[in-house]
Length: 162
Image (tube, rainbow, N blue to C red):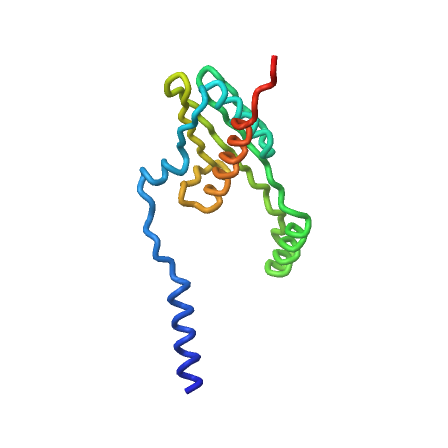
């Protein structure tokens, strides 16, 4: 009886762990990366620029007239990760080919397009090591959400009195 209960529990756990989500359509992916904001394009651009700085990115292209921002952030692996990797590689290859793990490069391209006098469309496209990250990638979603959150804080801030 205990064996049957254990077997049933294992089957339930295995079935619950299966992912049954379907791939996102292009429209659903666009909805994650493109949003309409209720501010003029120049203010949305300024908020996007500030959000990138706040998130630790270095801006490479900033063209307010075209509404285009590109930025990059380098993330180096910890010393412990590299030391472990070197030791494991040395053991497995008998001393040959031990190398450090290369850094990861996170990049973002933001496009701000005016949509009338008081609205703008903002598109955020994340990259990892030169590869476009699809919107259904959890890391890409996290990056996009982080930038949206930082932008909202900038947009909600009141402009200083003149």
